[in-house]
Each structure stands twice: as structure tokens, then as C-alpha cells.
Length: 420
Image (cartoon, rainbow, N blue to C red; front, side, top):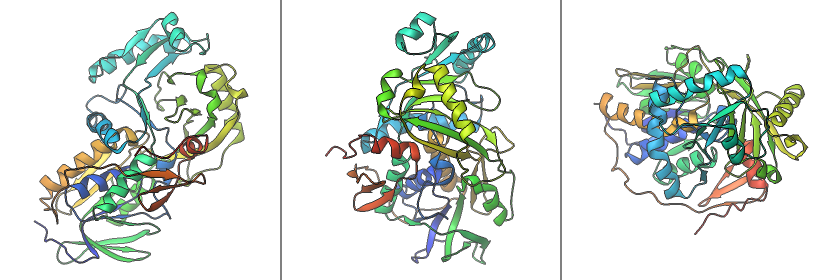
């Protein structure tokens, strides 16, 4: 068993990367009593891949059978709704309609439904065109057929992990932003010595949650089992007067490239169209492409005629940390006290608490690492307010909103004062 660390610069666990996964793992490990530090290279949390997702909370109906991804999504489903309720964070179970727009897609719907049964999602039902248009009266009559997945939900993918990180801080976790990791090595006592641009940090165990830079962080520790292949996605987000046009999110029949362009009704009732899926070389957030914007607008009108006549709240792009593999790349080195959480792609929000639960079990059972303090068994909500200028205050701490769609939802007439 690794010796316990007590110095303020020494921790049980160091996490590299402050995205959705890093914040979730920090929350679970801190609640178990582990002394944790989170190292984020940017100036604030939830940048990179985490500021470009849709906020959809998937059930795993189309996840690969027997995959790590499916296992994590299912565990997340078991945990996240109770957590959101306790913290009084926004969540809407609007469901999803998967719509076929041509005969070829129509032929695939029974296969999608069978696959959902195979993975244990049994409430997926086939809709007649009459039923579809009763549920979605503004949907285009070009639709050929649909299935309904009622368990699908939407949440705020920025506020939720931010709240988890804040809770972790109130329970002793350290969060160091603007702290890029430069090198890692093990000392003579088997502890990790992490060199950052702001000095050294020591920890018994390290968890790589670096997302788009996960392969680079792995390489710093002299191991690399996958390569990040960045995938760009672009969105258009419309203002809230468009919300009567649709009652739930509308998704196409998925392809090998992914879930396709979705019409999302966000947790704040903005309608968004996206993301695209374009393989790119750069890991940096790319500029908006006006050609793609026009195509998304046209596709939105294909789903909902007249959608493009509504006022646009914002447009943005994101980059997903795809790899050469279709499944999550969750690896651990028992002898080195190292865990890699890579290739989480587009379902990080949907699998986050399942991933953190897996990490918690590895740290406890495989590493045999004892926590530095007692665990926490309670969870209290914390008041949060919005200032109208991109800053949310949780307790007495200010956090900059990094997610464009969520910022649009806050700014578009939403009252961000949580209930007392």
C-alpha cells in the first residue's frame, strides 16, 4: 500500500484535465475521503471537448453491446438523476424521436429497436406517422417513420460538472487552473512527481482525464496505447421563441460516423442543430465555417420547416477526442498507480458518473490506496446565481461559463437564481 501523504503539496490522487470527466472523478474520489488535486492547463474549467457537447443524457440504446461505454452509461443512468435532484440542477426527460428521412433509413429502424432491446433498453417503441405527427405536429411531413426513446434526457453539461467540482473544493480538493503538466516521473518512494508550469505536485496515483490531449499526457508517462483523432462538430442555437416547434430532441438514424446531426431541445428550451462530424488535424477549437452553418440551417428546415426564420442565439464549434477505437480507452497500470480515461468522444456527459465509479473501484481495490480522511455521506445543494454577463456564482465562488449553448440558455430570459 502506498504511504499516505500529509504535506499540502502532496496528494493521494492527482487528476490531469478539468473537463466533465475530471470534475466527476474528482467529486467521487473526494467524497471517498481521498486528498485530490485537479490540474487544468486552461484558465478555467470545462474548456476543450467539454464546452462543445449537446447536453443530451443518453440511455445507451445504441451503444456497442458489451462495451465499456455501455457499462458506464448504464451506471451513470443509475446515479445521475438522484444527484441532479439533490443538487436541484436542471434536467428534462423530453425523450428522443429517431426519424428516418428515406427508405434506406426506414429499413434500419427495426435493427435499431432490436439493438436497444439487446442492451437492456426495452421501452423503445415504433411510431406510426400519425403518432409521430401527433407528438411533433411541426415536424416535416417528409419523415418516413420513427421510433421513440422516452428515457433520453437533457441536462446542463456545464453547470452540472461545475457544481461537482465546487462540492469537491468545499470538501478539501484542490483545483489548479492555468497549470499545464510538463513532465511526470516516479520518485524513489513510488510517488508521482508532476512538474507543471506553476511548480511541482506529488501524488500517490495519477488519473489522466486530459481529453483531447490524453494521448500526449500518456506519452509524458512513457506509455501510449491510442492516438487522439480530433473530430470537429458545429452547432447553430436558436433563441427561445422557436421552442414551440418541437417537444423533444429529433435524431437521425445513426451511421458509422456517429449519431449524426441532431435537433436538440436544450434543458433551457433553446433549439440547436448539430453537430457535424469532420475529422480535423488540430485539437484547438476551430473557427465557425459559414458554409457548414448554411448547411445546418437548411437541414434544420428539413426537420422543422421555417426553423431558420427564427433568431439565432449563437453558433459554435467543438472538438471531440475520437481515437482509432470505437470504445472508451480506460486503462490502468496497477504497479504504477496510473489510470487513463481516453477516447470518451461524444458521450462524456452520459457516462461521467459511470466512469468515475469505475475509477473509484480501481483506486480502492486495485491500487489498495487508503483515503486520507473519512468519506462523506451527505450531499447538500448550494445556491447558485447568474450575473447576466457570463458568470455563475456558486456559494461564494465565481465560475466563467465556457459552454456557448448553455450561455445562450442563461442569457435568453432564464432565471438563474436556484430555489431556496
